[in-house]
Image (cartoon, rainbow, N blue to C red):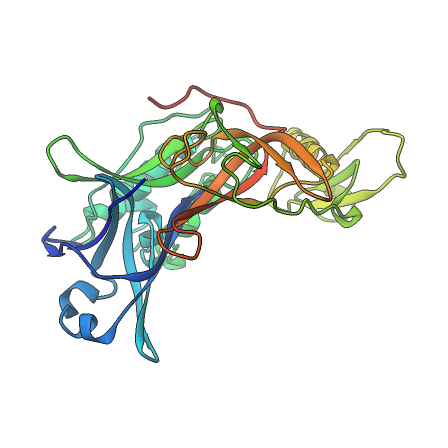
Amino acid sequence: MTTSTRYFAQHALTGEILDPDLPLADVEYGPELNGPGAFTATLAPRFARSRPQALDEGNVLLYVERDGHLRWGGLLWQAIPEGRTLSLEAAGWSSYLQCRHDIHGELGGRGPYVHADPCQVIRDIWAYAQSLPDGNLGVTVDDTTSKAKVGTPAEPLRFSWWEEPVLGDAVDDFVDGDDTPDYTCDTSWGPDGTIRRRIRLGYPRLGTRRTDVSFSTGVNILDAPPVPRSADDFAQTIIATGAGEGRSKRRAINSVRDGRLRLESILALPDVKGTDILARRAAAERVRRQARGTIEEIRIAPDHPAAPLGSFQVGDDIYTRVSNDWTDFSGWMRVTGWSARPGGADGETLTVRLARADSFHYGAAEA
């Protein structure tokens, strides 16, 4: 099957298309779970010299269009000459917040927060960042809600201007835990031909369990990856420690007997004050560490009907079967990111990053 891939550049503020078809090489791109995703490529000097406006780092948006679908978009951050090539590095929409701070305090009057939904705080962070002059990327954030809460009457969640909080770090804090939302960056064509730049939010998790697609050795997996197993990562007893010092330190222990030698692991969570939260985190960590052997990534054919590019999303669980000389592995694996390589010895390939999906809950699939 022949595919058509195009890379183009847009001015971050005016929306002007600066170059409709960049002649890039060595391209790799893709999204990730709870992160911006990445894009790398190279450009020959003769092309770079004739396109300076399209390579203005920090002011240019890059896109990947494959067979008419926008598969990736983000900000160009690096354009570095290396020998006879110009190396480009870009990252998805959430990377912008790493260069933005709360300079007014309380997100311009939107805080402080008590028993607030972190999804709403994330929307407020983006609203504040894009409300300031020359700061509007046109990014929209899903209206997802969650049952998670941040801030208490005793300790409200505050954004103090004198601490110059990094807005991107604040978002990362809200998606780092068991009972927290997930996000990923998304780019697509709108019905009127405009470009939609979006932060997809999910709760209790992003994605869903899929029965219509699969990854299998001998079908769409191009090679059989090893399944490493190490006792260093195994434990059936988790000791979770939270806030406090000495005898006042919060602690929760989750342990099961499984017929194996007892192995323990410490889960240090110094900012957690609730023993109920500690108990949930300890249980989730114990389930994760009891899983012996996993698949971290696979390479698949992106146009195979078993799971073509675009048929699954970051956060989805896909049933995965891997067979090689060392093991036969099968189980539900969660897609935590993917990266496409349009060229190479094997033609276009898709590397899918995976994590075990044993302890996740599932929401409705996105239409």
